[in-house]
Length: 444
Image 1 (cartoon, rainbow, N blue to C red):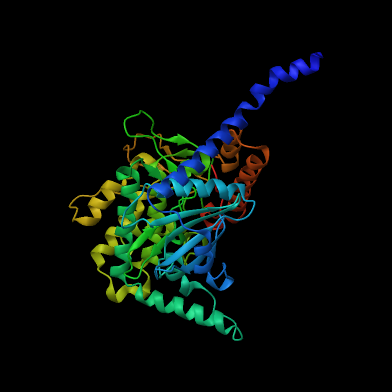
Image 2 (cartoon, rainbow, N blue to C red):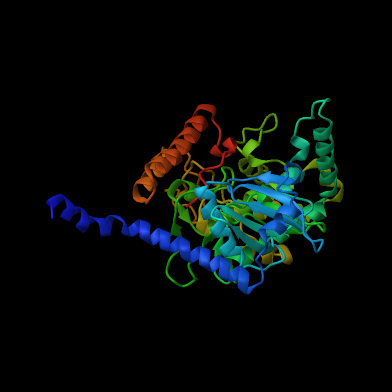
């Protein structure tokens, strides 16, 4: 045997071990999914879903995500469903597909979207079937008034926009408050009461669906991660950053430190958006304000005792002042720079469900691109700086994280480039990275 051939035979088992493990893991996941579908009678015939969605007609399409398109359909038993279809050749989508199917098959809660079943057809055709939620996503309703009027010759678009604005008028303050409470309960279930604790990683308005009774349902678990059981000594997991700018906690965006407190931060941003009717990633401060983003604006109003000015004018007639002020304070507590100061979701639900006589003062919000650190002049432990002058940028952290993670070179460069661009834009415009409103790579 030639020396080179011998060397190849020696090296091959070690070089291919990782790929074999990944392949075996993928096969096990596929087998698990099929076993779950069969055991729980959740297997759908491909032909039935083709018929239900009118052969995946463009007219039935509800939306498009990194995973692939989602279609509205009607089954033979007259149930309306939403069918998520894996994009052809999407490796990232395949991972998200398995992730979402595995997680949601174990989840059952009023405030989490219900997975009805699963379908695998051939090598590439994989579909997830969910309950259809008629009012669609919160962002389409909450932010509809901020959209420019449609062109006069676009009658279908005009009809759709008008419908969104009509729905927004129905999103009264009591309903907004119920959405806040519903999302909080859904997150509490995921963090503490699910079979295995789950961190969603992408809580935002577009991932909150509203049913015909305006009940909020958390959706899109493609980026969710299982969290270690309490008591194992770990406070967070280290993972590649994935999510949407404007909602991600600073410690997660900068260092990849993922814990349930990252979801709490995203929830806090969502609460302030629901109160104000304004989107954090596209926030423009009113004249005379030097606020960098919605969180900063809410914080400065709070410190001046003027939190009611944050409220969306369209819901003022139906708003209860004490509830509005409570929601603003909860939102600010959840977006604090230091994750240790943020309440967990159990405490948030308790605060929302009954009157709280004493509630701590929130510290300054964190923002992607800033670091939280303790001030060095003997202040109380609850007083923290947002660290905006520390000189550390997301690019430094993202590069460090990429070098210590098992990422491909291209994925590492993409993440680093995104973070660097955010930091440079922020410095040049004097704005927070929240203002960029872009999505980072959504796999991890």
